[in-house]
Length: 610
Ligand code: HGA
Image (cartoon, rainbow, N blue to C red; front, side, top):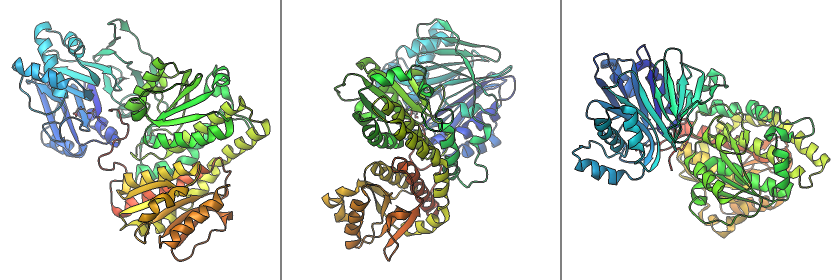
């Protein structure tokens, strides 16, 4: 999704802005641009379609020197990806603006502003905001007031950074529905939509709250809340090490992130388990009291996080005996729901800024859920700040657009939560100790699954020239099949569908032939025998099978059947371990196909627009 970077400094900011944009590339975007206020009192702007490298080349030819600037990577929502639609947008040649989000009433404002004589050069909703601010600037002669008045007329979601040539040396920013963070420097200050963009220049950050506006200068940061009261926002230090945003020896971020999983799963458990128990205080000081009262769990998430939620439903109903519903956020938020008493609202999001998930949470709070629990990877994100309880995953920055380590750490956190909840609902000490032992074995088991990398790379050539594929799983492994299919779609662009294996004969079997590889995850659980029958059904129709199976499952390779043995795992933790080979399979197929693995086409990392 779009990214914003800005700087107010005494030194030249072009390099800082460009580096910031590069660090936001992982979010996915279609064009990039920058506006800098030069020493001559003029704003110079550069915009290019495509990668930040293209913008950088233009800036080598014609540099944008100056000490105050704003920059942007755009992921189009209103108007096609083009140079004219790329940000920054300007009103005349004195005001420049960058925007993340969507202005819902842009058409009506556009008509009004046209009537006032403003000319539009783009199809974007953002340009409306530029002209609206300029209109108020003409009457107030004050950029801060002009932004304040303009945003009072906007409906939708936005993070904005505004620069005016008549008011040099500062940037005015605001946040309503899209994230914005201030980077605190010495004799210089910064802004960005994601703190990662600013790590080369600072590790101290202030997170703006919903409705905040701020005035950023070299030596001051002033913030006002929605009611126009001056407020202080806490300065927090960035915790993850700098190198977590580097690729290191790996060819792609995605591969690096797949390999980080043993460590980050371990980190997600750290401080939260003893040798035999889950420490429920790690979920929050009052967690015990709250968990005691929960009678139902409603999980909300999108994409990969939704698949994590689907796995958790099996766990919660199995171990805690509590009913659990799972729904994608974009559906949940637009329908009426019946809320059971004492329902816990559980949101899962890697970034904590997923627009639909946040909107669902805000609705849920009004609707009267018992409490909200967030499972999230980004400290200080909106989701974390707005939830009652939080379990932070410790995945560290995830740069690859296709989520890997965020998923398995979400599952780890969800299992910790499930065990804590189950303890209030009849889980015995022995069973808890057994589950904690299974959890603690995970890093080693994931490591063992990673050892299959080379063998999976060989297998992947069978998918190279295929257009479709089918993924099968049963029970809690069905969402793992869904996640495997999603990974293959996302990065190799091969159409992949996932089904609960028992559904095969109710339709998808009609598609099976030698051109349709069928991938299956088959741990040694009580559904294995049933799954084997489903695989026979595929073989009988000439389908080629790729089975990731428990070593004890007595499934063996034969012509048309490729079996990869996975070390024995506890049935409860199997979904985490069996995810690994599917990630590796997608990765290798994508590499063979030569796609942009870390930034697949049309996709964005944190989906901060609806
Ligand atoms: N609506 C604006 C910004 C889009 C955005 O924030 N994407 O993540 C545009 O289309 O330019």
